[in-house]
Image 1 (cartoon, helix red, strand yellow):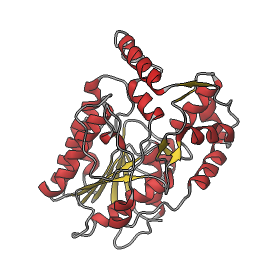
Image 2 (image 1 turned 120 degrees about the vertical axis):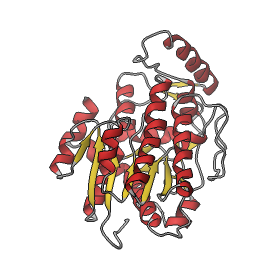
Image 3 (image 1 turned 120 degrees about the horizontal axis):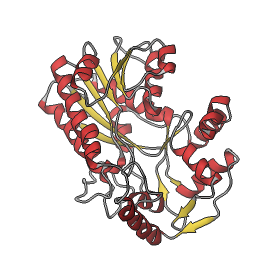
Image 4 (image 1 turned 30 degrees about the horizontal axis):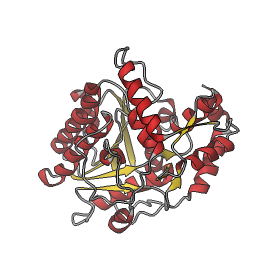
Length: 348
């Protein structure tokens, strides 16, 4: 997947110590590329791979300028994620941080810029038309700060393709899962063990999921495509997922069963979940912002409605097809979480 062609790439990966970031770093190293990371901490696994890390925040202009110096390709993965928190924090990281990185990239003569976006940019207060392609519009209203700030950053990235000398593109992966996942799998297992996991909706909702190796492959294929001046991928965003959507709650039950977690025993209708999320948001808005509600309106939409997309543009423009099936991806995920490192993450 994503075999190297042409000269060696010199790449910066922002958020390179995170789930997706570290997998991109590993794949680039395996291709023989030069890699540098911009991250807020020290990462022992990256140090073990002899990957230099510029320690700093995407909001720090000096750290950003140092990180982009001498690279020809940027994979911008770092972001403020989640459906709860101070709006200004999302703006500072997702919008201002991305604009700062784009400006530094143009100043440093970076050639290619691949942005990790999200389908949440098109999922508004009324949900989204499932099965749609990249012509789906940005909605007027969102239910959290994540979607609109990622959308504003995505617009800035795509506009930079024609406004600067940097060739840009964006990937919108959905429900990324796989080995070393610190979010989806551990949270599902933890909530199931605590008896706090309830199915939202009737269980018929279809969603896209994305195995980590396929997501990495798409990022690198897009970067390779942007190396061609006449690539049709320049200045565009692409939905990403497995070959077919899955029934979300069947997928969740497969994960719980595969990792010997307790089954789901409760169910909440979508409308009831949405109303509960709204009420909890109102209540938690009066508490310290570090306290996150157990359910929000956006989480209810994500968990209780369908949201899957047409992936043909990625195949057409830069040859992406998922090489690892959902079933194989789950088997690899289970194998890793059964390892000592995986068990520590599940039990941590």
